[in-house]
Image (cartoon, rainbow, N blue to C red; front, side, top):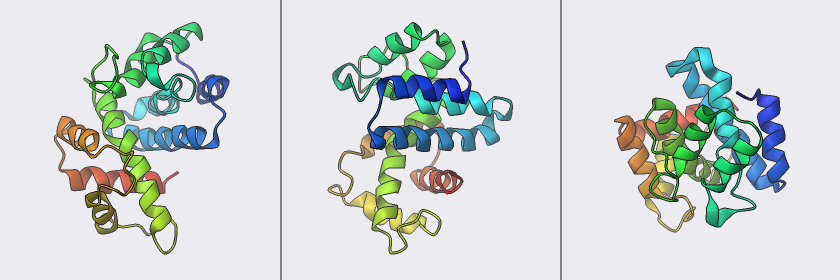
Length: 181
C-alpha cells in the first residue's frame, strides 16, 4: 500500500508519541513535499509520506534505526518503494541495506539532519522564526560545532554532495522549504 498522508500519520503515531519526534516528522514531510514540487510534482503525497515515516522506529528502537523501521512498515502493509525511500536516509549510519539512489532519497538524506540545525538556528534568531532567517545566520551557527551538535555536519555535507549541490544551495533551499510549513 502507498499510504495517504492520513494513513502515514496514523502509522507514525502508532510508534511515536513524543512531540519532538512528531514535529520533526511533520517538518521533514513538509520539506519533502516542497522539493517534490520541483522534482516530481505528480508524487507530492508520496514524497510527503516518505518524510513522515522516515523515523518511524527511532523513538522506540533507536539502536535498530532504519532496520526496525522497515519491519514496522512491512507489518503495516506499506509498499516497498516507501520503505526503501524512507530507510535509505540511514545509509552509512545504520545497518540499513538501502542507499540513496533516487533524487527523493538524496533529498531526504541531505535535509533530515539539516532541518534540525535550521530549526535550532531559527529559535536562536531574534524573531524566533524561520520566515526571516537567512543563509548567513544558519552558516554562522553551522560553523559552530557545539551548536546543534546532534545534527551531523558530515551527513549534511554528504547529502549536498550526493545531490551535486553546494552546501549553501542546500541550506538556502531547505530554509525556503521550511518556510512553507
